[in-house]
Length: 210
Image (cartoon, rainbow, N blue to C red; front, side, top):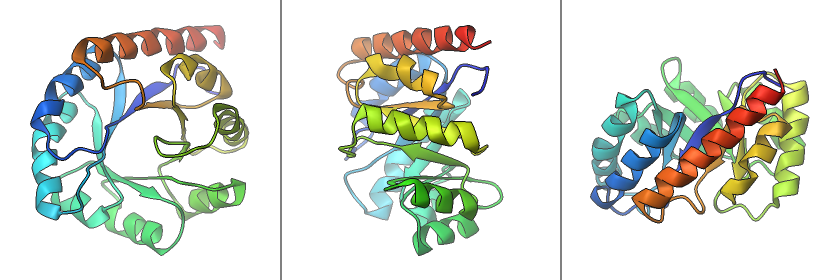
């Protein structure tokens, strides 16, 4: 387990447009140390995705937060994203790694077991995510896989928490990044308070393991 506190990995709800989301994003970025933003969209139209990124990516990137596209590696390159987040192992992940390297990030989630996680690691991803907003897996199951991975492998892992109050527990399991989406994006005030609270919780974990 790293002796540094995990950083935040924020995941947007599926967005149809970006302008109404800007106040929420700005509140989140101002309230804590956000390493990465995964932008999800409710459309697969390339023009709409690029329009959303044109608004959100500069806001995130101005503060040093990497901005990722979900699933679409070709769009990620054209949208000037920092990388792509893929689902599962297989040809699409391999194609994304080839397309994004060496300048952009390739991460992966949707891993249905330890074998899939090890296969993704061997493929050369930059991080693995356990759990996610649409994943029915329990916190205990996600935590177990994060702890297993962190104890054995060097590739960073992201632990998703469906309840922000569980972030400290996920940090104790050894996750290098804590992913948040559920319970985060209601209002700018609530978003800022949640990010600040999680930041404090995981900082305390970092202090206890030093």
